[in-house]
Length: 482
Ligand code: AMP
Ligand code: ZN
Image 1 (tube, helix red, strand yellow):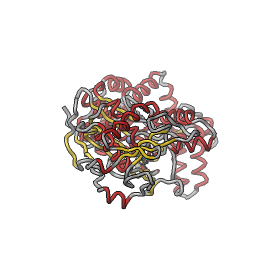
Image 2 (cartoon, rainbow, N blue to C red):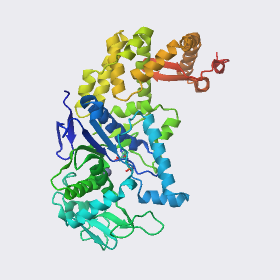
Image 3 (cartoon, helix red, strand yellow):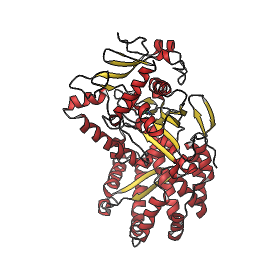
Image 4 (tube, rainbow, N blue to C red):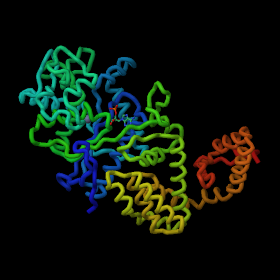
């Protein structure tokens, strides 16, 4: 069996992953707060943990992994959005969850086995809070319930900070009802205009952290394998989850391995609205960037390193995927069918992923396979297709190759269209290159615009421009350019 190694934030070491129960490997990942479209950074943990989920399924079997990712659907940001737009909270959270599914599906992510909504688990949260009060780890004060951090000696172990450091470093909310400024809210009162549930401490709503402890317990038990999220969640969110769960279930252990992805940046800068470099996954998809291209760019950086989104990387990813696809298609119809029915995963790709999810190393192995496919190696093509499928890339045997086979079978129409128009498109690309060389950007832009209008997709690669015809290809739009 393939041995997986993971870097555990808790121990700060890379170690062999040993599941508690190999017949049911259990993962919990913190999901989004649903009040707005996911920005590009939000998609990073989704892709990272999707790759982990796929790797675990590959190693332990498809039916032997349980992957949970929650939706935070009770939060003050959601309340504020509902008040601003004059809409109901449920309407906003339902709509946002729908967008999230559309956008994350478009990036080739599998849906988790469970996607619990916090508001469906309020009784479990209330029960957990009541247990924490009873055990002396929490106290009620002025309609609030607070977790007493001093009651848990290991508080701060995940992020490696002492309580004093945390007080000094963090912007903690000082409130008269807190015994220690680091104590955090488990339950807070709701005024009549805010969502609230009856509880032993009056009508109120949960603090943020308790939901993950309650949902993980309900769906995965009090001891499970892996807990993941962005590294911005390490403190205070994950620290607080550990304190709540370990105090509610002493000796159980909560999560064995903690995995944290680094943040995404844009062209070397933090993504932020004020810098004007803030965009959503949907913005990119609407601009025509295919989801698999976004995914491919993400896979190019190890999850524990900051990842920089650049337009150059986007172009390169687009060219690589186009190139791999055409390499497979060039092997011919019968080979393509064989690849479709017998795709395989490559050992080097799996070994790279098993080494702390080294997706960048996996891509290097895919490039090696692609070079063999260029030499006509059908076996390498089977591995390229199968390994891409395992990584969730839309080059896979089931989808893209099937599509290619279908295209070939459709009376070779698209192939012949491509052949019929190749001389014209080639000539126009030459004219564009000459115009660019002469700095005649007007002509170069006119040709580019005509390509867009005609449905010719052109990607500039190191080996020169590569092109494909979109379904709405209209050659009449190229007339008059010669
Ligand atoms: P939120 O909805 O803000 O709680 O974030 C949802 C997920 O996105 C969390 O796992 C965050 O850690 C993650 N996240 C937020 N911003 C970024 C970013 N710039 N890069 C990577 N992950 C991020
Ligand atoms: Zn969480």
